Image (cartoon, rainbow, N blue to C red; front, side, top):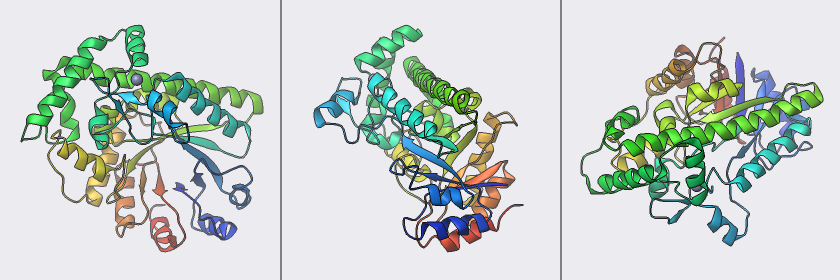
Length: 349
Ligand SMILES: [Zn+2]
C-alpha cells in the first residue's frame, strides 16, 4: 500500500528517513524551503521525495506589489487569503510554474504536490467573495462568463448572508443548490473552477516537458479540499483528475487552520453558509473519502492526507481505507511524532 507523509524533522534526518522506510512508508513530501541537497538523506534511505509549494503566494514580495496582486471583492477592495493573491495574475502563475520547473529539472524530486491551487475559501472571511479584479474581468470575458452578473450576485449573496440569522444550507454539499437563487453565484463557482483547471493544465504541460527531457516520469499531485468545500473554491475533482497522478483531499479530524475541515466548516457556519458541525469522527473522515471516491473513476489514485497527531489516527486510517482510499498520506512528521507514525503504519495491508 502507498504510504506517504508530509515533513521530515530537521534533526537526525537520516535516522528519521530510515524509520519511515522501516514503517512501510514509500514517500515523503517536503516544503519549498528544502533543496536537492537537503533531501538527499531521505532519497538515500529509499524514500521518494515530493516537493510542495503554495500556488499563488505573495509572501516575500514588496508590500506595494503584494497589494497590487491581491484578489478584489465585489466592491473592488483588496482581500488577502492564505498569503495569496489573485489566481489569475500572470505574475503569480509564472512564478509558480518556474518553481515547479526548477524542482522537476533538479532531478532530486519524484513529484510535486500542488497546494493552494484554488480561490479563497470561507475561512478567508470577506476574502471568500472574490475575485473581481481587472484581470479576472478580462479572463471572464475570454472564457464566456457574465462578469457583471457574477459580481452583482456575489455581492448580493454576501449581503444576504450578513443579514440572516439562520444558515443558508445545512452542509457544504447543500450550498451549490442553495445558491441557485442568485444565478451569478453558480456562474461564479464555475468561473473559479475554469480558472483553476486552466492553470493546472499549464502546470501539467510544464511537468510533461520535463518528462520528455529526462526520460523520467515526474509526478504531479494536489492537496485538495474535501469534496463539499472543493466546489466552493474552484476545485472540481472530475475535471482535475485527468491532469493529476495523485489526488489528496485534506481530511484532518481536529486540526485547525486555513483549508482544514474544522476551520472551513467553522468559518462557513460563521458566514451563515452552513449549520455548525460538532467534532469530526473517524466515520466523518470516511464519509469524506467516500465522497471523493464517488467523484473519481476507479483508476485515479485517491490518497487522502490525514492528521498524524490524532489519538484516533489508526481509526481514521481504517475508515479512509474502507471508504476507498488507494493509499494514505499524513500531516505532518515532526520530531516526537514517531508513536503516531507507528500507529498509522499498523493499519492496512
Ligand atoms: Zn482576480
